[in-house]
Length: 431
Ligand SMILES: O=C(O)/C=C/C(=O)CC(=O)CC(=O)O
Ligand SMILES: [Ca+2]
Ligand SMILES: [Mg+2]
Image (cartoon, rainbow, N blue to C red; front, side, top):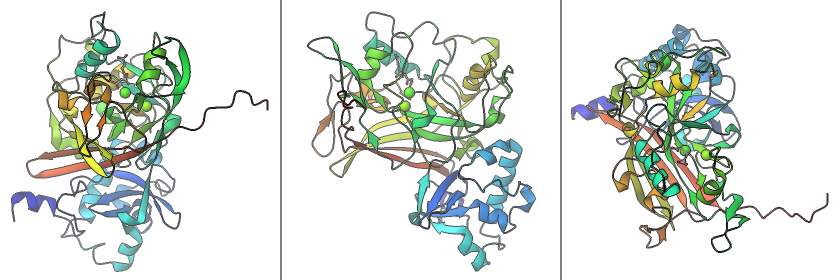
């Protein structure tokens, strides 16, 4: 057995060889069982572990959590407990599920009430998102979009290298894996008449992103210092910021994205903690110039997370993007410090999107807008068809994985299918 195998199989729970959910991971989620019961949970291999049940049966005494912390249908209450408790629970989970630990391993009755196969549950959205902000932190993406949307101007605006730019998104339309994405209606400028009309988007796009989830970080009026920001970040998810490019292009001037983006945003159901990601820290790209003092973090870092996007069409899957989280210019600490520098309050369960993650080569561009260069190039799929933008029935699958020194963790899948739009509203209806 190789060193790698050893590191991946330290639990008494069976972990399949290629699983994202190794003993180094312990992500958090919320699942629904076939009997309708909803539970906060973690996962090892293909086994879902009910955290409320673990707590109730006395396995988490050493963590000293409030008894109702996992009784709700979201993880917000646990996230509010703060970093100290997150670390304590993680280390307790690693102990309970270690192959040399017999406490739960030998208690068949408790095991049955705590462990459920992943195939017997449906994953739900793991947090109640209070506020959702989406950054714009890939220099390559911002440059590409600038070239296409504003061809007569310098592609990167002068503010971009001085601060992490963002827009405020909409939390009401955040969905998770397996939920369908309906093609939105909106105002779109007709190519021939050059006047706007109400139509279904013909330029339905994805944005490959990751998101981080915060705890209660500050009070109104109190900035979070860049060197402390990391303490308030609970974990990360895969994020797809669905975008209707024809609606966006017409509406975004001068206030930024609105209805072209707030019809749906997907996040993966498992939140991978910052503690699990600790093994995969890496350097940030070199900055164009030194940022202002409030954005200067001592020994700042990012994470090496390999990302992939597939389109499944007629049952055949084609990988269209291979990218990496480490390409982003601004770190999560800089994003949170900038977000709060004016005293803006951040709460437990807030979601911060990274912005579309594009690298420098074509295969790493994080949107179809870039891959098809605004619809001028065809993207070939393995079923023999081509795309510029998404078609109804297409399934988009995002994955994220980290691997280093024989340690591996991953985010699982974020998979959503496109369905046709609802019929147009009937303007002749009187009531
Ligand atoms: O450059 C623009 O006008 C807009 C770019 C975006 O699509 C905004 C956005 O969602 C930010 C991002 O994902 O990087
Ligand atoms: Ca976005
Ligand atoms: Mg969105």
